[in-house]
Length: 121
Image (cartoon, rainbow, N blue to C red):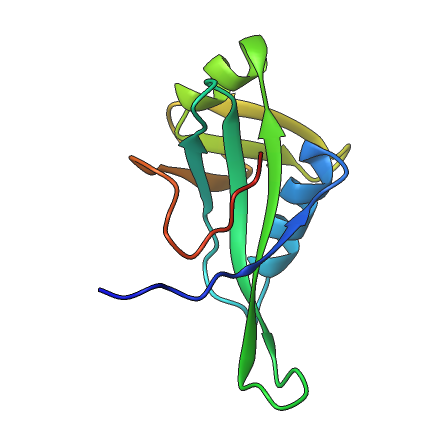
């Protein structure tokens, strides 16, 4: 396979901003959303959402990877979790192995950074 074109990577200001974006993308009429997670060489964990900005000038769509990098204990907790649970009443977030009766966004673990994602450092 030849060189894969890279998506535009946009770093979010906080994990809460990324989760809010994922939650808004999961609202109708959008499809069910999930958050990718993969480790960098230094054990930091990248959380990200791939989205398409439709009809961007001459392009049919511009792929955008919205991401946030976590480290330390938080990275370990997230890596061992399967869902981000969002409380819509106070915008609280927590991590869980199983979905809960709230907005539960699946965390999908990847073995490595996908080729279309640029280096995030």
